[in-house]
Image (cartoon, rainbow, N blue to C red; front, side):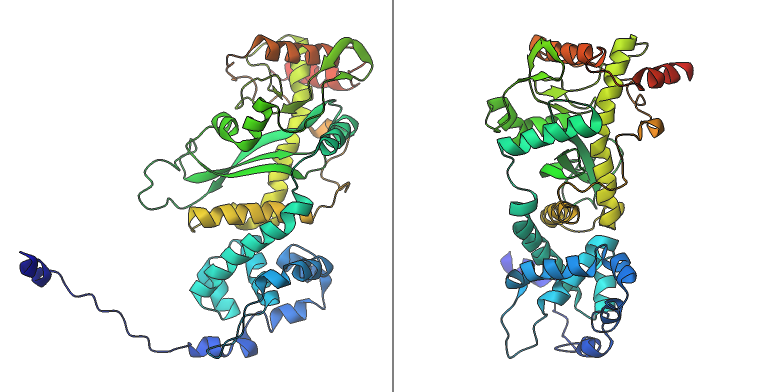
Length: 398
């Protein structure tokens, strides 16, 4: 039987290589993009920024930090690719989302070489940047974040805004419906907690697209730490100007996809809400939308997320984490750019998306926390001058 089986199976012969190194690749230093175009771009700062989505000084500082991790041992077989070219290849992939084959052709590298460069460089970026730009939050960091949310977005005792983003991918082989999401595409989910200055505080990457944001949060390290009280969060404190409300928990603001918890606020569900609840929803939305803004900034700086990624899920995790680290690296702490300000409330559309929310069962403690915040935002101590105008304007449009 074995002999008959062997006789019926066709013999697969490996294709013989025509070249040890293709002639096109051997002329890399003469015609490759790194040796020609990129060297010329260094003389024109604006064009360099448009090409890599960062300035020359930021590129050089990043290269200095990464060089030890990207340096390879020289061999007698072929010349190694230097760290600067490796970083250029990886940043070009992140900033454009071009395929490995396209980048390989322009840089005159092998396709498999580009794939390994992107994987290794993204891993090096994450390990190099995470300790400084995405460290484990401390109690002092939480206090600073809460202070900034109160100063910029009029929401006291806020630890951050949380949301999930679907990273579209080509469905992995034999994955079934694991990555199939409600949008009808395949994806992995980036769950992020961001601060008041458009920086990532905590990221969780790699969950299946079929999972809900609330389920991903419940199973994430952040969710478990909040439940167990091991996140070094500041103790409850009084809201500014309202000692009669007592000491309230520090909270995270999120949308209707997340459950209501004593440490996690979501909007009131339903239509035709009383004015007090609509004002709470508006104030919550004003603070929560920072997470949407951060995802927009991330997609603009790393346009790889505007395309469908055709790489393995393990590589996607490295790409997403590296892009988040770069996003924080390119936005230093305390930076105040023109993405939004405290006075940009006239252009907001805060009440969209809440009309069809469905309530989820929440504890009495969680509901009481939300009620106290609602009371505060409708009191002279916590109100802002324009909130009634926004609520009345939204009611008039119905």
